[in-house]
Image 1: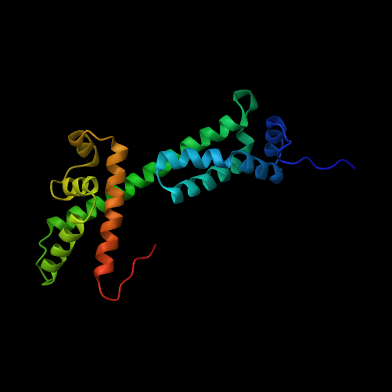
Image 2: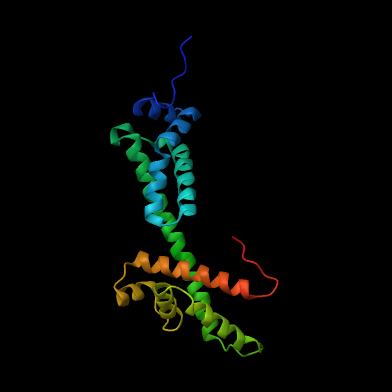
Length: 194
């Protein structure tokens, strides 16, 4: 009886054939062989380890679900997996952008509303937010001030500051997360969920 080949000994062609035929061991082999590459690409593009882990899982789920669509004549399994990775990274960036735009829209609506109507503690809230904003690193502070006080879109902020759009989005996301942590932590009896 011949011993089963290990994932290290499989050629790319054998691995691809096994994947397309539904062999889960070949999926595991593909994961072992290329997951660090996928994770590195996602980490560099997204700048967030947790998102990179999510993308890595989504990529290999995509590999498994799309295995019947793999065509060896179009390229290597590694190239195919990198293509899936690029699409999943783009999806993650789009989702991040949509989340940021929602938060920005909600924040703008709150700032435009009459803060004192029905809420006497609104003045305290404004002081708390201003204090938290002042404690942010300068780039995050600048992006959030331009967003909320000047009502600029992230594209407009990128144009005004000369920063790449991805940098503006990263500063907005990190700044909002820090603001949330500061504001929630300052409320008695509240804690921040990670």
